[in-house]
Image (cartoon, rainbow, N blue to C red):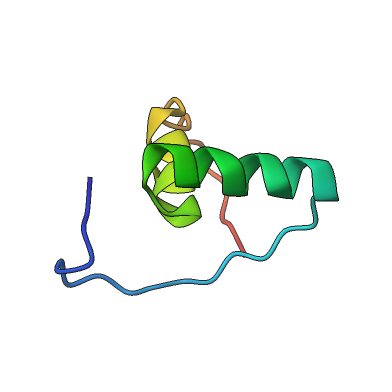
Length: 58
């Protein structure tokens, strides 16, 4: 997993979620002493790798 010290381009992800889900993330991140970004990073890293197809992402 990459850390802030790694040379990587940072992208911003905005998403709309309910207040209930937002506060659930806030409480969980506080309980685990981690940032919401690190929780999302870990979740993304746990996803399976996409199958490569002959399509382009625009």
